[in-house]
Length: 156
Image 1 (spheres, rainbow, N blue to C red):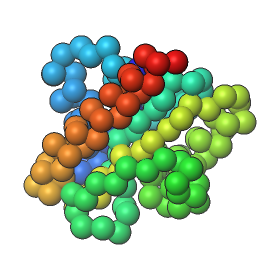
Image 2 (image 1 turned 45 degrees about the vertical axis):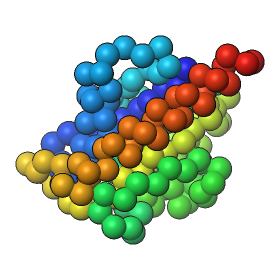
Image 3 (image 1 turned 135 degrees about the horizontal axis):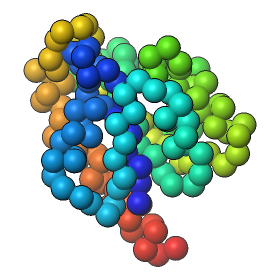
């Protein structure tokens, strides 16, 4: 099983991609391969799920200096926490700080991040066309990660 956490503010344009993905997955019906969490912009919800050993996959808009709608998946180990802190914000609390707290509190779950480059983050906006077009790619990445973790748990 993998925990899929959607981050972002549903009222701020492309920042809503995390909660939007969770909503899409919920509409697809239950799946034993994952647990869905809409964390909104709550850093402490993310902290709670980083504690333990169940793998975590975070979905959030992130300013990665690529074309709007661009998608990148990376592990915390693949990017420095300083770099992640610049790009993945828990809206007042940087992901790097939350991850450091989790590590200080005990075992920290394996964590990957799917970052989606926003076109616009502003109140009273919908997802941009560029970010909407990225949804199938995001769903494919989620399904791939869920299958990997399901296979690993079957053989361990």
